[in-house]
Amino acid sequence: MTPEIEEAFETIEGKYGAGSISRVRQMLDPAKQKRHPLQKAAKWIMPGLSRKPWHDPYEHPEIEPIARAFEAGHADIKRELDEAWLRNGEAFSDYEHYLSTQSDWQALYLFRNGAPVAESAALVPTAYKTLTEHAISTGTLCPLLESHFSTLLPGAAVKPHCDLWNFTINLHLAVEIPNGCGIRVADETRNWTEGECLLFDYSFEHEAWNKGRAPRTCLLVDLWHPETTLSEREALTVLITEIRQLLGGI
Image 1 (spheres, one colour):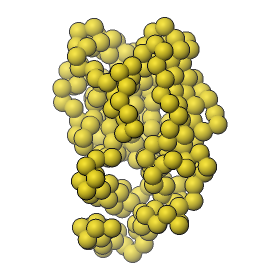
Image 2 (image 1 turned 90 degrees about the horizontal axis):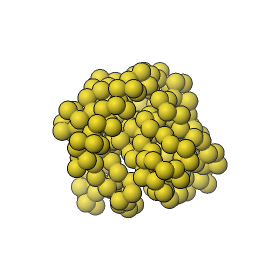
Image 3 (image 1 turned 180 degrees about the horizontal axis):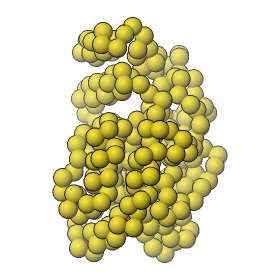
C-alpha cells in the first residue's frame, strides 16, 4: 500500500474503531483470498461476503426499495428510453468495459466517473430521478462504478468474464426484452422478465446474449454489496481511487 492509503486507513480506523476495515486489509493479501473457482478471474475478493452468484433483489433491506422503485416506474422508463433512441441516438455510445469496447453493446449513462450524468436527466427523467432518490442519495450506489442503460443489439453477446471485485453487486431492471435473450452467472442461466429486476454478484463468471431480432435493454446499477459496512465502503473508495490514479484507471 502507498503511504497515502495507509494514512487514510488509519484515519478510518480511528473513526470507526480498530478492526473496522480488517476485511479490506485481508483482501489485499492474496494468501487470505478464498474464492469460488468461478471467481478466479476477479482481481479482488473481500472475505466474509456471501459467496453466491444470484441474490433475491428483495431480500436485502437496503436494495429492496431501489428494485421496487425501478419496477414501479418501468412503463415510464421504457417509454422515455424509446423516445431517447428515436430523438437523441447520439447520446448512446459503444459500451466501454474494462476488458473491451463493443459497438453492438450500446450504453446511455446516468452515473459515471463518480457523478450523475446531468445530460441524461432530460432524456430519461424517470430513471434519472429514481436513481438519484433511491440509490445515489442513500449512498447505496457505489461511486467507483456506474449506472447505465445497457442495450445489446440483435446478435450481440457479452463473452464470459469476471468483473474486478465482489464488494459491489449488479442490479438489472429489464426494460425491453425480446425473445432469444439470456444471462448466465456461474452455473445458472436465467431470462429477464420485462419490468422486473435481477440481482447478481458479477465477480462470478458471467455472460449474456441477444439472439433475438430486436435490441435488448436493461438498466444496470452498480450497488455496494449489502454485506459491506460503512467503514469498508470508505476504505474501498479510497483504495480504488488511489490505485486508479497510480495505474491510469481500472
